[in-house]
Image 1 (cartoon, rainbow, N blue to C red):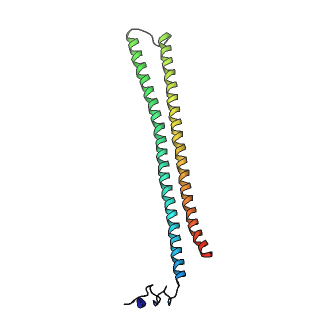
Image 2 (tube, helix red, strand yellow):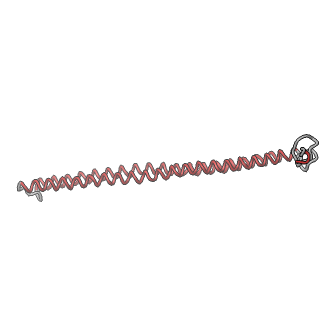
Image 3 (cartoon, one colour):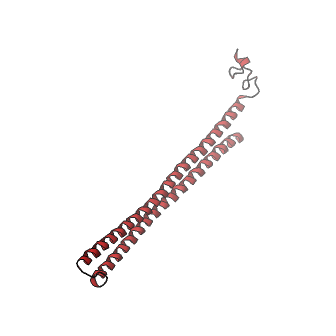
Length: 172
């Protein structure tokens, strides 16, 4: 089969779609190729924006989990202090009782009350620190989600730019 009967673009004697004897000229072929290229560019821009947004959203979810972990860790540290205090008070009470000391009044009671007060203060500080750290992670999560939205928007804008660029070449 020769070039003429196969419809290939080639020499001026070719009678295919884009040859001199064909249905479309070289300008139409260029225009079609340019349109396809613009469409592929637009699709690529949107896909890249969506991929970046997905990565940022995954990172945001990680920051949220980190925030929850920080709060749980602080709560657990506070609980450990409380348990340790109860064990210390129980041990001191048993030891004092074995020696015949009344721990329900006077100096022993004041020491126990002061220990309880100190542990309450320590627990409050630990939990506040956990909340502050968790807040930092939540801010990072919000920033990451915002970056994801920006990436998605940028992809869409670049797609529009690609299509608009094709439109301008058609006008000129």
